[in-house]
Length: 585
Image (tube, rainbow, N blue to C red; front, top):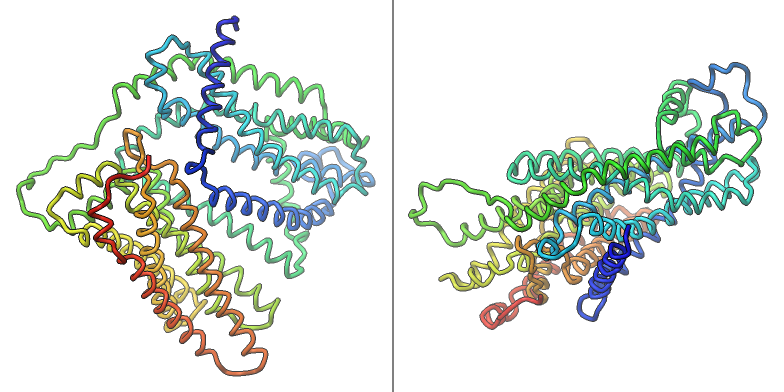
């Protein structure tokens, strides 16, 4: 790289740093979202350390040689299987981390190159593709590096404190831990650079195929929650004291060992990490030189191929931003036919959501998957609560899960006004009253909420987790609280309207509105669900047959909250609507 190229890269990095700092200025920084994310990450790390630590104890106690390792013959040497199990466990954990970081890297590369707002500006400036790519890659690397440090140190510290009495970890382990943190983002960006263009092609292929896009995303989300349910079931077994060691029989361990042996380049990363852990480790393929050369080769090949594709990638990206993407065109034969204004607005909002991939995933796909989310959590939580507390709390637990996931499903209401963008002014100029404008949004949201709640209650009843009359109660209460969330979210968004300046009008930063609504929904679920759980436990412990209190209190609280939310929504709504001049930009 010449001096001029280095200067250009520094200038681009400075520009990106200034743009990033702009988001933290007063009025732009999402304090609620930041605190919520920090608390969520802290909670996840804490829970992971607890349960992963127990899992480490179970997994490393599985003795024996399996798969290709068994071919060497003989019984495992003393303490040898601890090294072997630790090696396999770390390889699996790093593979999962690598997969998620790779997905994030591909998304960031596509967003920074293909979807960047400054692409049109760059196309008119004397900026070469290599300098632009290097600047973007450095920014992505540092964001990946933060994730890498959190994941790697959490996993390695947990393993260290669990197996330190069995495996000799020296200072080399901590040096290679830091090296692992630095290498993982390099690998994810290198591999992600190769996959970014095919992924972008696939996204463009799906862009105007809305139904196929919706079905694919919904199916992938369902699979993700199915895998999540497997993890929850394992956690339940550990909490109940069930020994998972017997789950890892010879057949499963043979498959696992074969899988680990194919996990390149992650296998090389673990080889470097554990190369000096124990003398016996030399018997399970830990070779630092081979691992280092393998990682270097992967990086060189991926970077070389990426540079070959680079010019085409950026040229295509800049052209697509200049020319613009194709618009969805459909022939209408009845444009002159009269249409009801209210239902026309409902259709407009639905098409806006359905034809925007990020909205479609966050809003519709999550609503479709909600019954599975409730079912998976209920299948694990029901038996867990019975065994730990000794009280049947199926209805109360189902109601809590229904309210919690219903609140998360209804977060799309938090952009009911903002996602209209400049279209909001056009609608305001139409000969339509403010009630039609806002209640059309409420109507659409309630359709999604009611259908989702109905499906959730039906699944619980059909699987025998609750009785049919209990399912009817869950449906009614969930629908009413859904109305509460919709009203509060829509009015709060109107009070803090945040219109996007992008060409497509898509909201990528909500200014804290979505975070606030998430917090409101989760708190309401915890408060209402917590009150009913406590009341039921206390009455059962006192041997009082007051199960009907759950139904009475649940509906009473729901009715009061619905009235308060409705009055909050309609309070001076017309006056504010006609005085509204513009959303925050």
